[in-house]
Image 1 (tube, rainbow, N blue to C red):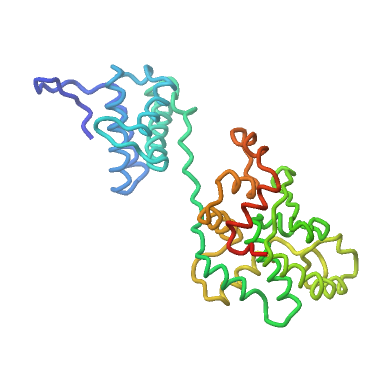
Image 2: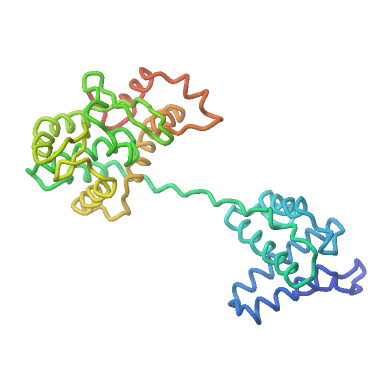
Length: 323
């Protein structure tokens, strides 16, 4: 990387303090750290852009750089400019890591008196949601729940119908008690993160599966228990409350039986629930309420959504909500 600059008439200028420090840092990465050629190329490119940004502001000394300047560079990366398109959070984070490493090295090597980049955090990459399963795959998984004709098959079918039919988190599903279900009203009380509770409609498929389990499956599992079941809805083979890990295994085994080759997890079912509702015409605010997503900016919207509204939208939009 060139550490010299040039004037408008092509005359070569002397290297700046920042340029010399960058060259020293790259030598350090190459010789002492032994970074791969491709990695060095990335560092060189990122730091060249950083030097250009500093030069725009007339900054050529390391101790002239402030935290606000480094933060401004991050903003420039995200917004882009005439010569560069906006960077994704992942690419911007990589560049900021290079800048932070450079300034940390400069202080350690005695080239600067302070580190202005230490307080500038790389942007957090957006979380990637799992791809929603096609409805046909979901139905195949539900049909494949449990070994046919067994008590556990009744439980497993009920569990998976509840996961997909309500969008419940796996922890919310296994945390359900029998009394949390209102089979007459067709709703279930889910307890989400931070102890927040929400009432979610339960479609007829899930109600039928749960009813079959309560009548013919749960009593048999409860009879195996040597103690109290604590009112838990979903029981394991020993009569205790089903664990998250066991519930996860139920889903994975059903997906295997169904021949679904995609990666399937409880969150995949939750995401499929939301996606299929939106595809069916549900308002995104209603879906947020059904999922229990609460934030400062959306809480007021949630309070306007009543249980009756939820039930109506659910009944018309969810593919397994027939009456």
